[in-house]
Length: 115
Image (cartoon, rainbow, N blue to C red; front, side, top):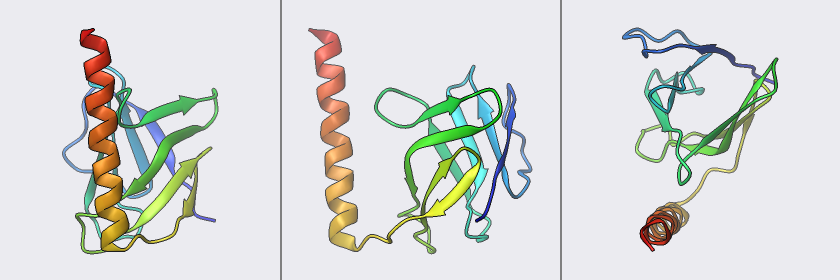
């Protein structure tokens, strides 16, 4: 099973190393190179409606899964306790359904905050 290391940093470096998850708490962002090896930069915002980081003192988990639907590779994986687990690839219909659900979740979350 593939593993990933992590670094808590303030600023995301301009050159990313393979196999490193860069976490900026200050800027609420985690960034890494795509796990498949294509070299694309994966940016995961850390917000109540996007991703969350769980740090247990030794390892990190990023939730929910990372689906790189805009990349040619379309890789899909979980990062759990520094381990990478590949997930089912989604077809175009599943991708659209997921995007719609994400959009609805964001809309509902921010509407409730305004009430």
